[in-house]
Image (cartoon, rainbow, N blue to C red; front, side, top):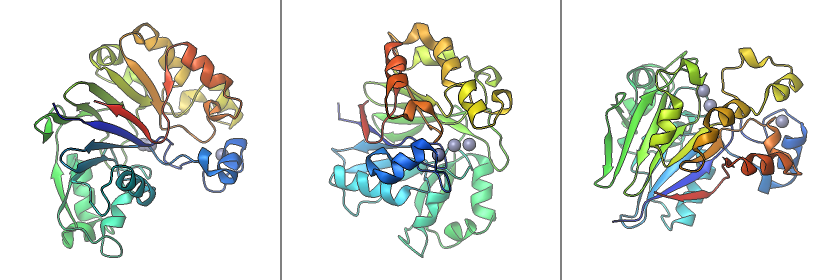
Length: 288
Ligand SMILES: [Zn+2]
Ligand SMILES: [Zn+2]
Ligand SMILES: [Zn+2]
């Protein structure tokens, strides 16, 4: 069996940490000390023996995320072999722009996307230039249909409910030779999904889930009503999946800059860990 590493290369909500024009406590700390910076949620599948890697979501932080992958795994100047996209929100696909002629100028790099996302990339400027110049080759993937990445790794899209203005939204099952991972960076509500998250989490060895907001109190603090925010709260997810933490490792990612789990004193983080859940960190590695 070959070694397969799932590298967690970004853990913030679309706007990153610090978020532009925000001077909240979490953002200020990240501006002052780069160790607290977080980049938009993304994963890399690293295949060290083949000297190859694949990317899940092309974030606005792609430049930095790519450099870290290439340096850490000794793949300097080695482009990713493919990119899987979740959906058309600003934290998840604009990194494609770096593949264009202004920068990398890649040639037919495979980009896996749902039918609507494919249509947008091929027809709408400025993305359409990437296909017109053959920088990328967009390939349609379908719910439930596994894509073989190597003989030992598959990636399978599953549709999730999310404000789908420009595209459908996918979550991904990522199966390595040893572990099955469920990655859901964005979902509106668990009860709006036609899959039972409890059953799905049971089937997974590792879940990396939407942890955008912690609690209704956090949202009240930033002047939002939790009933109108299309993300499950960490507190709700912990209640729902609390029985499963012995069998499944559950990480929260896609953290909003306002999220109190990012606070300096770390007490909330410790409380979450005491309940058997984890907060995903930048550069975290999972052997799958
Ligand atoms: Zn997002
Ligand atoms: Zn902030
Ligand atoms: Zn989104």
